[in-house]
Image 1: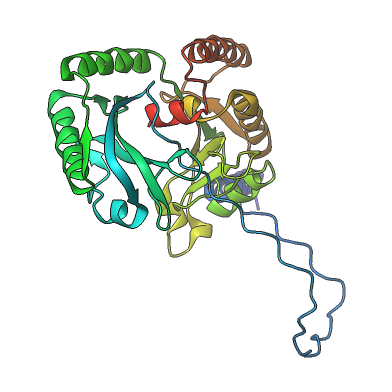
Image 2: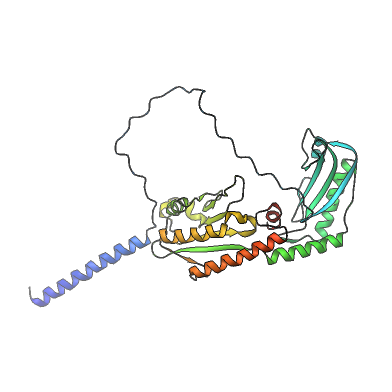
Length: 341
C-alpha cells in the first residue's frame, strides 16, 4: 500500500469514526432523559406467607376536613335581606333553592340565619331559619356585575322569598352596578398570575424524569395529566404553585419516549396566602429544577431571566400584597379567592 493510499484509508477511518460519534451524540441528545431506577434488592426475598386479617390494627388516619365554603360578604357581594314571618325548616329552604348557583357569570347564593346558633349558613336539613339573605358577587375575572345579571339575581331571590313566605329588600341597581365596576377596576389593576418557563438546554426530558425531579421538591400529581402542584402547608388550602407540561406527553402510548423540552411553573398570586412565601418557593424551585435538569429559566418569549430580575419581581409583589391587605382583600383570603376567580 502506498503512502497516499494509506493516508486516504486513514482519513476515511477518521471520518467514519467522527460520523459514528456524531450519530451517537445526536441519538443521546434526542433521547428523553429517563427517571432514575430504584436500586435493585441485593437478594430475592421469599414471598410472604398468607396471614388472616385481624381487627386490632392501629386506627386509620382521619380523612382531611373539607374546606368550609366562604359565606356571603358585603365587601364583594350584593346582599338582599329576606324577612320571614315564622321560622322556616331547612328541608323547605333546600327544596326551593334555585336550580343554578349563578346569575349570568357571577356566583349566586342564599344563606339562612340558624335559629339555634344565630350564624349565617347555607340551608341544611334538620335546622330552622329565622331569616335569609340572597347575594350575588359584584365582580370576578369575567368582569363586573352588569344590569342583566343584577336583574337575574332579583328574579331568583324573589322566587325563593315567595316560596318561603318572605319579603326581600333589594338595594338600588344603579348603585350596586357602579360599586361592581369600581371593584372590578381595582381587581383588574392588582391581579397577578406569574409564570416561569423552564427550557431544556440539550437533552429533552421524559414525563417520568420531570415528575421525579419535581417530586424531590415536594410537588405531587395534579388532577389533570401533565400537571403537578405544590400543596399548601395547611390542609384544604389552595396549591401554592403549579407545574405543567404538554398533557399529550403524559398520555402517550409510550410516555418514556415522549420528548418534553419545556415546562411551566405558575403562581396565582391572589389565591395563595402571603405567609406561604409562594414567590420565594417558586424562585427556589425554578433555580433547583434548572440546575438538576440542565435547563434555562425564561419568560414566555424565551428570554433568559437573570437572578437579579427575580429579586425585582419579588420586591414588586411585596407592594402588591400590601395593597391587597389595605383593601381587606389579602391574598389567600376567602374574599380574594372569590374575587380573583
